[in-house]
Length: 372
Image (cartoon, rainbow, N blue to C red; front, side, top):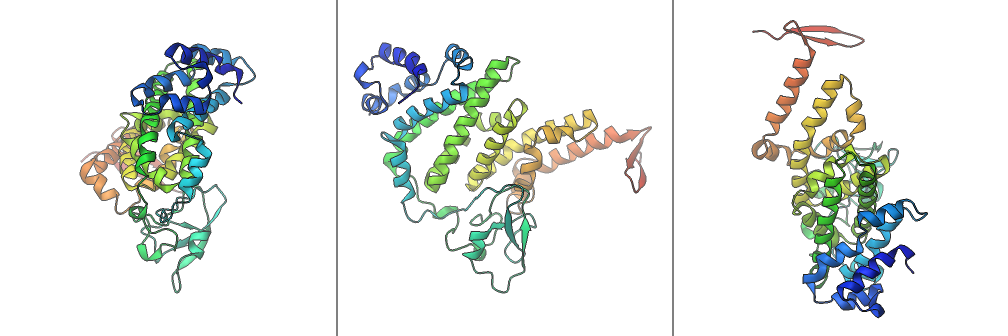
Protein backbone atom coordinates (compact mmCIF):
# COMPACT_ATOMS: atom_id res chain seq x y z
CA UNK A 1 0.00 0.00 0.00
CA UNK A 2 2.80 2.43 0.90
CA UNK A 3 6.20 3.09 -0.65
CA UNK A 4 9.36 1.17 0.17
CA UNK A 5 10.95 4.31 1.61
CA UNK A 6 8.77 3.86 4.70
CA UNK A 7 11.19 1.12 5.69
CA UNK A 8 13.12 3.88 7.48
CA UNK A 9 10.04 4.83 9.48
CA UNK A 10 9.22 1.20 10.22
CA UNK A 11 12.65 0.65 11.76
CA UNK A 12 12.32 3.69 14.01
CA UNK A 13 8.76 2.76 14.98
CA UNK A 14 9.90 -0.74 15.95
CA UNK A 15 12.75 0.73 17.98
CA UNK A 16 10.20 2.92 19.75
CA UNK A 17 8.19 -0.15 20.72
CA UNK A 18 5.54 -0.46 18.03
CA UNK A 19 4.98 -4.21 17.33
CA UNK A 20 5.76 -5.21 13.74
CA UNK A 21 2.21 -6.49 13.23
CA UNK A 22 0.97 -2.95 13.92
CA UNK A 23 3.09 -1.28 11.24
CA UNK A 24 0.02 -0.26 9.26
CA UNK A 25 -2.11 2.88 9.60
CA UNK A 26 -4.90 1.05 11.53
CA UNK A 27 -2.30 -0.74 13.66
CA UNK A 28 -0.53 2.50 14.52
CA UNK A 29 -3.88 4.07 15.44
CA UNK A 30 -4.47 1.22 17.90
CA UNK A 31 -0.98 1.67 19.37
CA UNK A 32 -1.28 5.45 19.83
CA UNK A 33 -4.89 5.53 20.97
CA UNK A 34 -5.23 7.35 24.29
CA UNK A 35 -1.45 7.92 24.39
CA UNK A 36 -1.29 11.63 23.59
CA UNK A 37 2.06 11.87 25.31
CA UNK A 38 3.69 9.95 22.44
CA UNK A 39 2.15 12.00 19.62
CA UNK A 40 5.06 14.42 19.16
CA UNK A 41 7.57 11.62 18.83
CA UNK A 42 5.37 9.54 16.49
CA UNK A 43 4.87 12.57 14.23
CA UNK A 44 8.63 13.18 14.14
CA UNK A 45 9.13 9.53 13.15
CA UNK A 46 6.52 9.52 10.39
CA UNK A 47 7.87 12.72 8.81
CA UNK A 48 11.10 11.98 6.91
CA UNK A 49 14.44 13.09 8.33
CA UNK A 50 16.97 15.13 6.33
CA UNK A 51 18.95 11.95 5.60
CA UNK A 52 15.87 10.15 4.27
CA UNK A 53 14.90 13.17 2.21
CA UNK A 54 18.33 13.14 0.58
CA UNK A 55 17.66 9.56 -0.52
CA UNK A 56 14.11 10.36 -1.66
CA UNK A 57 15.33 13.39 -3.61
CA UNK A 58 17.58 11.14 -5.68
CA UNK A 59 14.85 8.53 -6.24
CA UNK A 60 11.93 8.37 -8.65
CA UNK A 61 9.58 8.91 -5.73
CA UNK A 62 10.53 12.54 -5.06
CA UNK A 63 10.15 14.63 -1.94
CA UNK A 64 6.60 15.80 -2.59
CA UNK A 65 5.33 12.23 -2.86
CA UNK A 66 7.30 11.30 0.24
CA UNK A 67 5.61 14.03 2.30
CA UNK A 68 2.18 13.20 0.89
CA UNK A 69 2.56 9.56 1.95
CA UNK A 70 3.66 10.66 5.43
CA UNK A 71 0.62 12.90 5.80
CA UNK A 72 -1.70 10.03 4.92
CA UNK A 73 -0.38 8.11 7.94
CA UNK A 74 -0.77 11.17 10.14
CA UNK A 75 -4.35 11.69 8.97
CA UNK A 76 -5.16 8.20 10.20
CA UNK A 77 -3.86 9.27 13.61
CA UNK A 78 -5.83 12.52 13.51
CA UNK A 79 -9.16 10.83 12.86
CA UNK A 80 -8.30 7.50 14.54
CA UNK A 81 -9.45 5.71 11.42
CA UNK A 82 -9.83 6.08 7.66
CA UNK A 83 -9.57 9.86 7.00
CA UNK A 84 -11.77 9.61 3.92
CA UNK A 85 -14.64 8.16 5.94
CA UNK A 86 -14.12 10.73 8.71
CA UNK A 87 -14.22 13.66 6.28
CA UNK A 88 -17.37 12.32 4.64
CA UNK A 89 -19.05 12.12 8.05
CA UNK A 90 -18.06 15.72 8.78
CA UNK A 91 -19.41 16.77 5.38
CA UNK A 92 -22.81 15.35 6.31
CA UNK A 93 -23.16 17.63 9.35
CA UNK A 94 -26.03 20.10 8.91
CA UNK A 95 -26.10 23.80 9.71
CA UNK A 96 -22.50 24.45 8.65
CA UNK A 97 -23.30 27.24 6.18
CA UNK A 98 -21.17 30.11 7.44
CA UNK A 99 -18.95 31.71 4.78
CA UNK A 100 -18.68 30.60 1.15
CA UNK A 101 -15.05 31.51 0.52
CA UNK A 102 -14.96 29.89 -2.94
CA UNK A 103 -11.54 30.75 -4.41
CA UNK A 104 -11.54 32.22 -7.93
CA UNK A 105 -9.11 32.05 -10.81
CA UNK A 106 -8.15 34.94 -13.06
CA UNK A 107 -11.11 34.68 -15.47
CA UNK A 108 -13.97 33.37 -13.32
CA UNK A 109 -17.33 35.14 -13.37
CA UNK A 110 -18.77 36.70 -10.21
CA UNK A 111 -21.43 39.20 -9.18
CA UNK A 112 -20.89 42.61 -7.70
CA UNK A 113 -23.89 44.09 -5.87
CA UNK A 114 -23.54 47.75 -4.92
CA UNK A 115 -26.57 47.41 -2.67
CA UNK A 116 -25.02 44.63 -0.56
CA UNK A 117 -21.26 45.24 -0.74
CA UNK A 118 -19.34 47.05 1.97
CA UNK A 119 -16.77 48.30 -0.54
CA UNK A 120 -16.19 48.13 -4.32
CA UNK A 121 -13.74 45.20 -4.08
CA UNK A 122 -16.39 42.77 -2.77
CA UNK A 123 -18.14 40.16 -4.90
CA UNK A 124 -19.93 36.82 -4.64
CA UNK A 125 -19.90 33.71 -6.79
CA UNK A 126 -22.68 32.83 -9.24
CA UNK A 127 -24.33 30.10 -7.07
CA UNK A 128 -24.46 32.44 -4.04
CA UNK A 129 -26.00 35.20 -6.13
CA UNK A 130 -28.61 32.85 -7.57
CA UNK A 131 -29.44 31.49 -4.09
CA UNK A 132 -29.90 34.98 -2.65
CA UNK A 133 -32.49 37.70 -3.14
CA UNK A 134 -31.16 40.71 -5.04
CA UNK A 135 -34.46 41.88 -6.48
CA UNK A 136 -34.23 45.58 -7.29
CA UNK A 137 -30.55 45.73 -6.34
CA UNK A 138 -27.83 47.53 -8.29
CA UNK A 139 -25.72 44.57 -9.44
CA UNK A 140 -23.46 43.62 -12.33
CA UNK A 141 -21.47 40.65 -13.63
CA UNK A 142 -17.68 40.91 -13.51
CA UNK A 143 -14.61 38.88 -14.40
CA UNK A 144 -12.53 38.22 -11.30
CA UNK A 145 -8.82 38.77 -11.01
CA UNK A 146 -8.52 36.20 -8.22
CA UNK A 147 -9.81 36.44 -4.67
CA UNK A 148 -12.73 34.62 -3.06
CA UNK A 149 -16.49 34.80 -2.62
CA UNK A 150 -17.60 37.17 0.17
CA UNK A 151 -21.02 35.63 0.82
CA UNK A 152 -21.43 35.07 4.55
CA UNK A 153 -18.54 37.39 5.46
CA UNK A 154 -20.00 40.24 7.55
CA UNK A 155 -16.83 42.29 7.06
CA UNK A 156 -17.47 42.41 3.31
CA UNK A 157 -21.16 41.81 2.64
CA UNK A 158 -24.43 42.92 4.24
CA UNK A 159 -26.38 40.18 5.98
CA UNK A 160 -29.49 40.78 3.90
CA UNK A 161 -27.39 39.94 0.83
CA UNK A 162 -26.29 36.52 2.11
CA UNK A 163 -27.56 33.54 0.15
CA UNK A 164 -29.72 30.77 1.63
CA UNK A 165 -26.65 28.58 2.22
CA UNK A 166 -24.36 31.02 4.04
CA UNK A 167 -25.48 32.93 7.12
CA UNK A 168 -22.22 34.08 8.73
CA UNK A 169 -19.31 32.50 10.57
CA UNK A 170 -21.21 32.45 13.87
CA UNK A 171 -23.52 29.80 12.37
CA UNK A 172 -20.69 27.30 11.89
CA UNK A 173 -21.04 24.40 14.32
CA UNK A 174 -18.05 23.68 16.56
CA UNK A 175 -16.02 20.66 15.61
CA UNK A 176 -17.34 17.64 17.56
CA UNK A 177 -15.36 17.30 20.78
CA UNK A 178 -14.29 13.72 20.07
CA UNK A 179 -12.86 14.80 16.69
CA UNK A 180 -11.13 17.85 18.14
CA UNK A 181 -9.51 15.74 20.85
CA UNK A 182 -7.86 13.44 18.30
CA UNK A 183 -7.08 15.96 15.55
CA UNK A 184 -5.66 18.68 17.79
CA UNK A 185 -2.54 16.97 19.22
CA UNK A 186 -1.45 15.52 15.87
CA UNK A 187 -2.07 18.69 13.87
CA UNK A 188 -0.47 20.88 16.54
CA UNK A 189 2.66 18.70 16.49
CA UNK A 190 2.66 18.71 12.70
CA UNK A 191 2.49 22.51 12.68
CA UNK A 192 5.56 22.63 14.93
CA UNK A 193 7.51 20.42 12.53
CA UNK A 194 6.33 22.52 9.58
CA UNK A 195 7.53 25.68 11.31
CA UNK A 196 10.96 24.15 11.90
CA UNK A 197 11.27 23.11 8.24
CA UNK A 198 10.35 26.60 7.07
CA UNK A 199 12.76 28.23 9.51
CA UNK A 200 15.71 26.10 8.40
CA UNK A 201 14.84 26.79 4.76
CA UNK A 202 15.72 30.46 5.20
CA UNK A 203 19.42 29.62 4.80
CA UNK A 204 21.08 29.05 1.44
CA UNK A 205 21.01 25.23 1.39
CA UNK A 206 19.03 24.24 -1.75
CA UNK A 207 17.98 20.81 -0.42
CA UNK A 208 16.43 22.37 2.68
CA UNK A 209 14.49 24.83 0.54
CA UNK A 210 13.32 21.98 -1.66
CA UNK A 211 12.17 20.01 1.39
CA UNK A 212 10.36 23.03 2.88
CA UNK A 213 8.66 23.72 -0.45
CA UNK A 214 7.41 20.19 -0.90
CA UNK A 215 6.22 19.90 2.70
CA UNK A 216 4.41 23.24 2.38
CA UNK A 217 2.67 22.16 -0.82
CA UNK A 218 1.61 18.85 0.76
CA UNK A 219 0.42 20.55 3.97
CA UNK A 220 -1.56 23.25 2.14
CA UNK A 221 -3.10 20.65 -0.13
CA UNK A 222 -4.16 18.51 2.84
CA UNK A 223 -5.61 21.48 4.77
CA UNK A 224 -7.54 22.69 1.72
CA UNK A 225 -9.05 19.23 1.40
CA UNK A 226 -10.08 19.37 5.07
CA UNK A 227 -11.65 22.82 4.55
CA UNK A 228 -13.53 21.64 1.47
CA UNK A 229 -15.29 18.94 3.48
CA UNK A 230 -16.15 20.85 6.64
CA UNK A 231 -16.50 24.47 7.71
CA UNK A 232 -16.24 23.24 11.29
CA UNK A 233 -12.83 21.80 10.48
CA UNK A 234 -11.89 24.97 8.58
CA UNK A 235 -12.68 27.13 11.61
CA UNK A 236 -10.73 24.78 13.87
CA UNK A 237 -7.68 24.79 11.55
CA UNK A 238 -7.74 28.58 11.30
CA UNK A 239 -7.72 29.02 15.07
CA UNK A 240 -5.03 26.39 15.56
CA UNK A 241 -2.81 27.93 12.90
CA UNK A 242 -2.74 31.47 14.28
CA UNK A 243 -2.21 30.16 17.81
CA UNK A 244 0.85 28.15 16.76
CA UNK A 245 3.70 30.46 17.82
CA UNK A 246 5.25 32.03 14.70
CA UNK A 247 3.83 29.70 12.02
CA UNK A 248 1.56 32.26 10.39
CA UNK A 249 4.30 34.88 10.26
CA UNK A 250 6.75 32.41 8.73
CA UNK A 251 4.20 31.23 6.16
CA UNK A 252 3.57 34.83 5.07
CA UNK A 253 7.28 35.20 4.30
CA UNK A 254 7.64 31.75 2.70
CA UNK A 255 7.11 33.20 -0.78
CA UNK A 256 10.69 34.51 -0.59
CA UNK A 257 12.09 31.02 -1.15
CA UNK A 258 9.09 29.11 -2.51
CA UNK A 259 8.34 28.09 -6.08
CA UNK A 260 5.32 29.54 -7.89
CA UNK A 261 3.16 26.44 -7.49
CA UNK A 262 3.79 26.40 -3.73
CA UNK A 263 3.02 30.13 -3.38
CA UNK A 264 -0.21 29.68 -5.35
CA UNK A 265 -1.30 26.75 -3.18
CA UNK A 266 -0.40 28.56 0.05
CA UNK A 267 -2.24 31.74 -0.98
CA UNK A 268 -5.28 29.63 -1.87
CA UNK A 269 -5.21 28.29 1.68
CA UNK A 270 -4.97 31.81 3.14
CA UNK A 271 -7.95 32.95 1.07
CA UNK A 272 -9.98 30.00 2.29
CA UNK A 273 -9.12 30.61 5.95
CA UNK A 274 -9.90 34.34 5.77
CA UNK A 275 -13.57 33.42 6.14
CA UNK A 276 -12.87 32.85 9.83
CA UNK A 277 -13.06 36.37 11.36
CA UNK A 278 -10.39 35.94 14.03
CA UNK A 279 -8.01 34.42 11.51
CA UNK A 280 -8.57 37.40 9.20
CA UNK A 281 -7.56 39.78 12.00
CA UNK A 282 -4.50 37.75 13.02
CA UNK A 283 -3.44 37.34 9.41
CA UNK A 284 -3.88 41.10 8.91
CA UNK A 285 -1.47 41.81 11.76
CA UNK A 286 1.14 39.50 10.23
CA UNK A 287 0.53 41.03 6.80
CA UNK A 288 1.17 44.54 8.12
CA UNK A 289 4.54 43.55 9.60
CA UNK A 290 5.59 42.04 6.26
CA UNK A 291 4.26 44.82 3.99
CA UNK A 292 7.04 47.42 4.61
CA UNK A 293 9.85 44.98 3.72
CA UNK A 294 8.45 44.46 0.21
CA UNK A 295 7.94 48.20 -0.28
CA UNK A 296 11.53 48.87 0.81
CA UNK A 297 12.81 46.37 -1.77
CA UNK A 298 10.73 48.03 -4.50
CA UNK A 299 12.20 51.41 -3.51
CA UNK A 300 15.73 50.00 -3.47
CA UNK A 301 15.35 48.46 -6.94
CA UNK A 302 13.43 51.44 -8.30
CA UNK A 303 10.76 49.20 -9.84
CA UNK A 304 7.68 47.15 -9.03
CA UNK A 305 9.45 43.83 -9.67
CA UNK A 306 9.53 42.92 -5.94
CA UNK A 307 5.72 43.21 -5.91
CA UNK A 308 5.61 40.66 -8.71
CA UNK A 309 8.18 38.38 -7.09
CA UNK A 310 6.34 38.54 -3.76
CA UNK A 311 2.62 38.65 -4.68
CA UNK A 312 1.30 38.39 -1.10
CA UNK A 313 1.23 42.19 -0.76
CA UNK A 314 -0.68 42.89 -3.97
CA UNK A 315 -3.07 39.95 -3.57
CA UNK A 316 -4.03 40.45 0.07
CA UNK A 317 -4.01 44.25 0.30
CA UNK A 318 -7.50 44.22 -1.18
CA UNK A 319 -8.58 41.55 1.33
CA UNK A 320 -7.42 43.63 4.30
CA UNK A 321 -6.94 47.33 3.62
CA UNK A 322 -10.34 47.86 2.00
CA UNK A 323 -12.50 46.23 4.70
CA UNK A 324 -14.48 48.97 6.51
CA UNK A 325 -15.02 46.86 9.63
CA UNK A 326 -11.39 45.71 9.84
CA UNK A 327 -9.32 48.71 8.77
CA UNK A 328 -10.41 51.05 11.63
CA UNK A 329 -9.48 48.34 14.13
CA UNK A 330 -6.05 48.01 12.54
CA UNK A 331 -5.61 51.79 12.70
CA UNK A 332 -6.43 51.79 16.40
CA UNK A 333 -4.71 48.60 17.57
CA UNK A 334 -1.83 47.96 15.13
CA UNK A 335 -0.78 51.50 14.07
CA UNK A 336 -1.79 50.94 10.46
CA UNK A 337 -1.55 54.62 9.53
CA UNK A 338 1.92 54.94 11.06
CA UNK A 339 3.11 52.03 8.93
CA UNK A 340 1.53 53.32 5.72
CA UNK A 341 2.79 56.89 6.22
CA UNK A 342 6.24 55.47 6.94
CA UNK A 343 6.20 53.61 3.61
CA UNK A 344 4.94 56.75 1.85
CA UNK A 345 7.72 58.81 3.43
CA UNK A 346 10.33 56.31 2.21
CA UNK A 347 8.88 56.51 -1.30
CA UNK A 348 8.95 60.33 -1.28
CA UNK A 349 12.51 60.44 0.03
CA UNK A 350 13.64 58.05 -2.70
CA UNK A 351 12.11 60.38 -5.32
CA UNK A 352 13.62 63.58 -3.92
CA UNK A 353 16.35 65.43 -5.78
CA UNK A 354 17.97 68.53 -4.33
CA UNK A 355 15.20 68.95 -1.80
CA UNK A 356 12.42 68.57 -4.41
CA UNK A 357 10.07 65.68 -5.16
CA UNK A 358 9.99 64.63 -8.81
CA UNK A 359 6.84 62.88 -10.07
CA UNK A 360 6.93 61.81 -13.73
CA UNK A 361 4.81 59.78 -16.13
CA UNK A 362 3.97 59.77 -19.85
CA UNK A 363 1.37 62.50 -19.53
CA UNK A 364 2.43 64.89 -16.80
CA UNK A 365 5.45 66.22 -14.95
CA UNK A 366 4.88 67.65 -11.51
CA UNK A 367 7.33 69.18 -9.10
CA UNK A 368 6.58 69.45 -5.43
CA UNK A 369 8.88 71.14 -2.97
CA UNK A 370 9.76 69.07 0.09
CA UNK A 371 10.97 72.11 1.98
CA UNK A 372 8.73 74.27 4.17
